[in-house]
Amino acid sequence: MIDDEVAARLRDICLGLPETEEQPFGGHTAPSFRVRGKLFVMTSEDGRSMTFKAGPGVQEALVGSQPERFFVPPYVGAKGWVGAWLTAVHDWDELDELIRDSYRLVAPRRLAALLDG
View 1 (tube, rainbow, N blue to C red):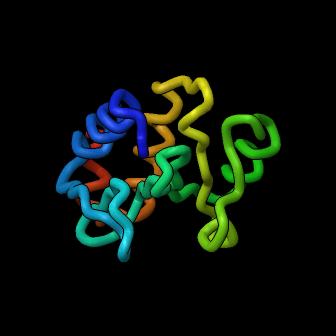
View 2: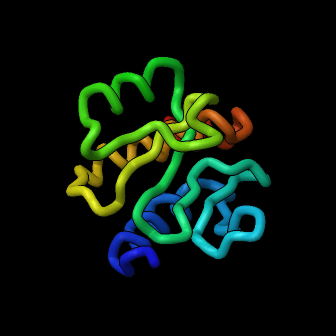
View 3: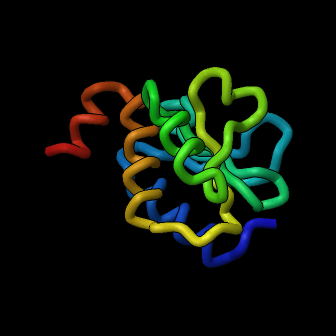
C-alpha cells in the first residue's frame, strides 16, 4: 500500500487543484485523481508508483535522464503518460510541477488557466 506520508503529499498537491476529485480507477482501490471525470494522476495498487499525463517529449526526457525515478508505464505509456517510482527519492517541487502539467493537459481551459492566474 502507498506510504502514508507520500499519499498525503500527493493528496495535498492534487486536491489543491481546482475541481479535483479523488476517485479510484476502474476496480482498483488505490488513489487516483480526476478533474471533471478525466484522470490526471493514478497510483498503483501496491503503492510503489504513480502515473501522470505528460506533453510531447517529456516522457522520453524524464525516463532517459532519470530511469531510477521515472519509467514508461504499461498500457498508458504509449500515449505519453509517465510513471514515477514513489519508492525513489524525489524532488517534490518537481513532482508538483509535473502533476500540475498533467492537470493542465486534461482540465478544461478555464480551470487550467486558474493555475497560471
